[in-house]
Length: 172
Image 1 (spheres, rainbow, N blue to C red):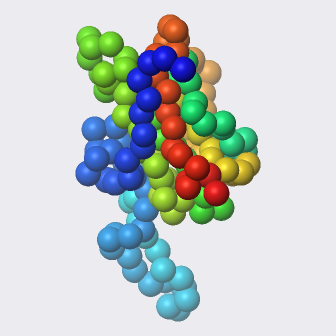
Image 2: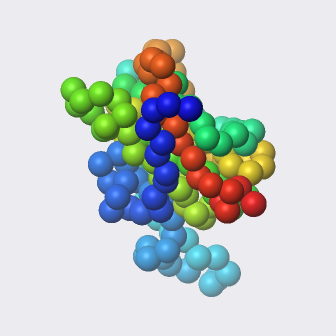
């Protein structure tokens, strides 16, 4: 394996702000509803799906775990909408994003580790890797855009110069 090996940092709202929202309840305002039997956390992410007559689309993705180290060979982005992922089984997962700019891809890529109690919402046009489950097959609630317009651009990274490794502790 030749190239740059990236190790994830903990996912936090401050660190991820340039790419979108971290969906989590820790530190968020809430209110009690349903006669005090249910706690409601509102407005956890800025969903953006209405461009070009789009509509909200709610899906469940089932992602197989990836072997580490993982070669980053392609990134995608969605020019017409945001895209949100929230783990349904409290299983940690990796979030790989890239900043805009003229620098080579390896310099722009960032890797975050979700605690499993955190989801993410990519802003429109944010370059990101496809879903990366760790350790076991994992399900995610996904909110993105439905519609007839093409909403996915992909770029291939030549020679797999970027690798992500989480170490064995996260996979156990």
